[in-house]
Image 1 (cartoon, rainbow, N blue to C red):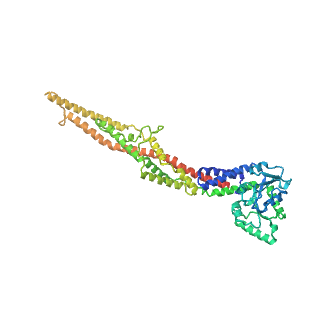
Image 2: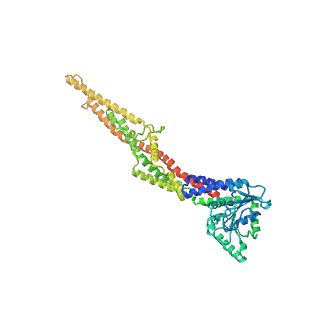
Image 3: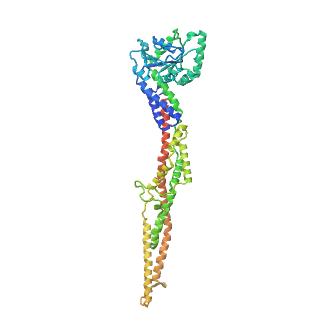
Length: 532
């Protein structure tokens, strides 16, 4: 479907979607003002479409331009008092054609003075307004003109031969309405004061001025309200617009186009700007460093070494284990992992190097996610990911505290080695007791009574003692490489789990908000494209 064929209701719905998205993201003064104007337009559109298909035409002009005289000529009665030297028209006047007095519409427009025109089927449904003078010395009159210019369906700007090029009216009113050429009509009034050559010169000059201002599609008529010149042509234009019954839709459509054009400055190109694997990896590395994952990994390795050495070492010195605290317990880790609410760990705070690395990684990911975004959305992206260090540190600490660092049970082979150590300790103890018994017998002069068995000339008790001690020591030494291997393996597994935990925090706290801003921008841009 071509853009001009999109129904106004669909364009308004798309604009409303764009406004809703922008209102939550764009906070700059200029952007907020544009969003506010678009929201006001939506409110206006909702009210205007509910008030029927009447055609509201407003005559606007400066003091002395003859617009009130023109209004009376079209109304067929002296409804508005004309004047030259003072702003006679202080409030808007209305003339209504047709059986419907259009009271609800005029109440919405806040036009107090109303006149009913005799029946005229050709203009049935026309509401003609005479606005206050736009150059009035009274501020309230000028504000009233500005208000009604934004509400009427068709604007007829009445100029006179002396001030038709006045910069005030062109810069303040006509130039901003360049996108509303289809609902704008310019009338050069009082041509009865000019001869034919002067009239042609004025019209040519005014036409060129309008064209340069982007109003090439705006009709220009020469009229004399007093002499009646050109009134038939002006009336025919009004008859055509009333018969079409779409002036209100055309005005709202032009307003929507203007709002879209203003908001489009806040929209860039849509595209797939997801954070890639490399940036995600760098971010996870930085989060892991800030969360103390290497410290926890080292603590896991030391803890497993400590427990393994105790399980495979000589039983009689295992009590010394209590003299060396568990590294994980010192960090408040390893107890209750993954269970509900976990207290804070005792990990040291991230240092300057870790914080700098995290800041760099976050900035790189943000730049990737914000590639191609215009400044207002880039600002929104920065605000969204500006997570406080305290909040991120708390989330990372909680993630580390809840991570299951692996099973705490003693492996079967270490239990077997421990049992063998107890057996060797028992052998050494038997040897000690035997030697003590022999010493006692020697004191009693009974050492010749009990024979002392020997192996290769070495007393068996001595073999038991030395063999038990040496065997236990050798077994402990042989077990250490396997204990160290298991400790390193546990460290790798723990670090993988910790990295997954901190990566989840990064996804939730940083990457998801980045993706959300990008998705909202693309939704905003797509809605503007539909509304335009």
